[in-house]
Image 1 (spheres, rainbow, N blue to C red):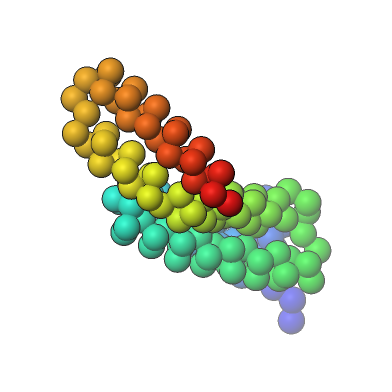
Image 2 (cartoon, one colour):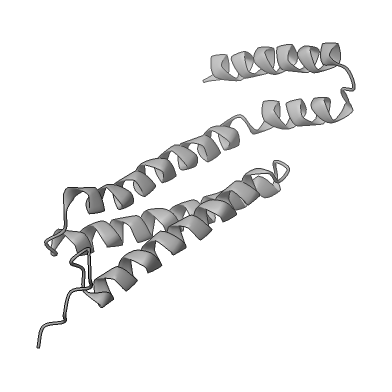
Length: 136
């Protein structure tokens, strides 16, 4: 027996519930990612966990939608979540590669009380990151 589509959007209640569950889980995981991004550098590594979970959930949702007659706009949500997750993961990897200069910059900023001191921290960061790039 086929399920009856809901009122205006033509979705079955089960499909609507799946989409709401996907959207809420992605939103909560991105909020966790933003919170984790504010942690100091050694603890900031936890940002990778929610990003990887978002990637897994997005791929699962894209695979599920591949077998369902869904409009193109519906397929855009998981694709957007996957793209943003890849960018966040690349940012986390970049911070891991440049751990020492980034850590020095954060420590310098914590002691910088003036804009001139903050600018000096930025210049020092540029020099140390350029030096780290030259080592590769």
